[in-house]
Image (cartoon, rainbow over all chains, first blue to last red; front, side):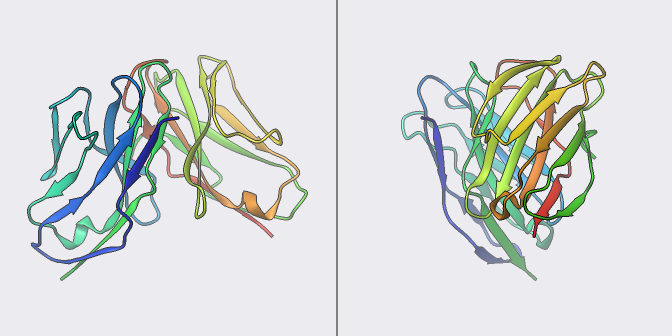
Length: 112
Length: 114
């Protein structure tokens, strides 16, 4: 079945550091890929998405590129802030079903 | 604010009991999804409804059931509760039934089974 694997956390960074969270997927066909973010005590919010190979999703300084050849969708941000402390989830959705299949989540802690 | 509401926010109950979780989707959204977030299983899809009809089923236990009403709100019923059912239950909604459309998540209901 479909699956998403992302690096385990926690990832601890200093403010203004560069952030990368690795995400790889296994799926047949051409899934759409998503990054969701969960702030403490809140639900999930869509951070960015990409629907086809080589698409780059971007939002709030975060970027991720859909790489079909490596089945990856790594999340990056050039300069993190304390407010970026959250849990980040990589997910995929197949056109046929539309449910989201999530990775295990990566907790990021940014220290001032 | 995603526009998806869930009640109650917290629920504490005992083993063997039955509870009902409620979700109101964003205005105009016809699809409702339920997910369970637990420490050992992560975020797992439970079930999807579209315009009142069950559309997709995931890892939902037989003790759990759901329905979507004509006003499009949805309820997730959990019965014969066990300690392992303690988790955060999320509802999400989207406009359409199929395709990789964005899902909007509610704040979740935290269920604690004692």
